Image 1 (cartoon, rainbow, N blue to C red):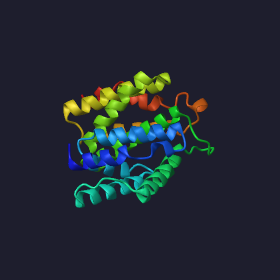
Image 2: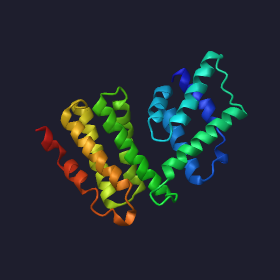
Image 3: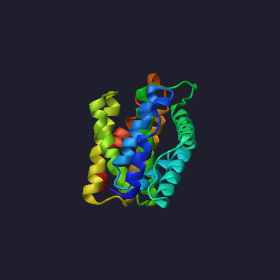
Length: 223
């Protein structure tokens, strides 16, 4: 565990979660906290969070506090001003994540689906650009895919998650992360999943089919 992990653990443990406006926001915070603290290098994971739509200010605040603590002999206590900064930036980020086309707040399931789509999009972009965090993002997405089956949901979503996990494991085992065919498949899947997550539940039937077709028989692209 790095020094930044220890510092971030202290900061996030003192975050006033109870002051967040809803159970959904509190659950979102706990998910982000667990991901940050579970990473081998929390500061690098913060850089990934920075790229997530709406979370740049929250991630920047945390990075600044970690760097400040590193320069002041590990003083990790957060004062009222720090709390205000983190609370306001997280609320803005959570609000942006929660906003939907009709302006209403989505359900917890919607949060999970949009979060899943965001993870796929991040991985697709990282692989396409050759970013160093691609493997970390890939492993995170495999874990998320495998958890979907346990949570349940639409049959097509569960099937896609299963096939996607198999595809991602194949990429790792075959060392194909830089292969242009992988980039193409991930880009296509990301586009379809993003469109699906932004579509009302009642109108989603068949919207994942294009991605399912490419994932069901993905090995044929590498023969």
